Length: 309
Image: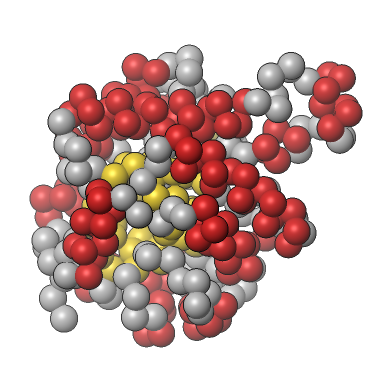
């Protein structure tokens, strides 16, 4: 645990509010840059600019543009490794660690250019397979191997912590957390809730808390769901969980493969929802798909600096 993270963890212990950044891929789309291949190599200036804008908006933690960057993300396009080697691009084996390294580097460059050295860089990693399909999770042995490999890439690249986000089951979250503990990097977990406040595999808040006993993340969050679903989930979690919690909702609609921007949650309306989340005790708040630096600026200026009991 580096000094930067030690200071942030102390803030969590003092019930201080911590602000996450907002959407990365959707913000790229909003600025006219497609998100395919993550663009951390081909559009470095734009990626740096997005990170820097979130830092200037007040984010204490920024996330790397590395969502779905794991070896399996490329393998799933092919029948097997032999097929990938025969018809795929020659660099596919080396692409995930290279892009993760470049993704962390873009965030580090933005932090340096804005002069806010205290800002932390969270390595963004989702489930090994499709994040909205818990039934597609690989075997325990595969998860153990692949999470360890990918987390090591993030740690070696200089990430301050792991943000395992848009998870759909406590089983897979536990595998990810075990990998982070083995590698020696702090970790947070964000789960996707449904409209009942349950995970996509049906687990309720109490079941999640029980399943993660002994390896709890430093912060347990809900993300990548509509505002009302995040509100419901945080309300349920607050009843059964006493460690730091948080949330970051999406605004808009998914129109595969892109994001559809809508206007039902402009920054002031999003802030109103976030105040309700803080009322449940959530102290790490930010935005997911569709949110912008303006949303994060509203959270920074409109939320209390410290939670009150």
